[in-house]
Length: 104
Image 1 (spheres, one colour):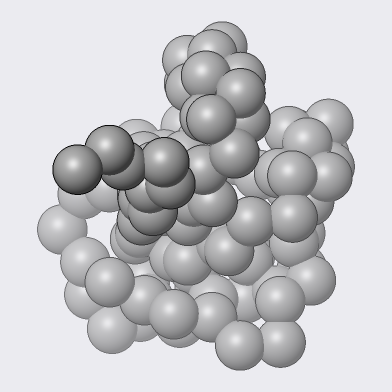
Image 2: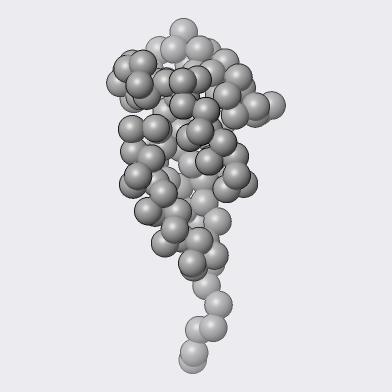
């Protein structure tokens, strides 16, 4: 039997400005295959200013332009506490403009 169509469900983890080059590379490959994906975003990777989504609006606009699902993958990619989770949701709403944010 010949398979003519396929379906893939993919989640790109650790989406943060620090990895913009790698994410762009992954996106280019997946776009050629027409694969939908979810971005697991870290708004303040390793708690460093240069990785803060609020300081990287070009990266935020890039993610928005791709029109894929965006979910929260922790605030800093360190230990997650309730206070950090709440702050993460605020950053995601401010930068990406999400009404509902999924945390995993």
